[in-house]
Length: 84
Image (cartoon, rainbow, N blue to C red; front, side, top):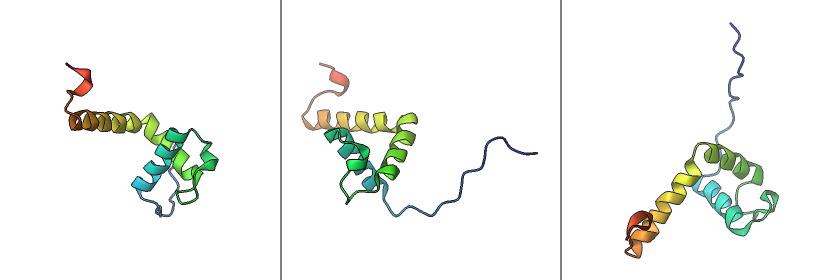
């Protein structure tokens, strides 16, 4: 039986760490630059953008934001989620 969804292509392992890809995403979000204008010391913009789309659709970006937000609030001795 033929499957209507093609199998994922086998690709070479990435030479970039998830941290480097996240740095590229954060750079774009912070600066608001075009994806293709990311600094050359970061992964290629198409790699960064692909991961951004995948992680955004899976809720990873929001999860990272929430965890970082809670850590900052804890560091400045405030209760999480704006509780008084």
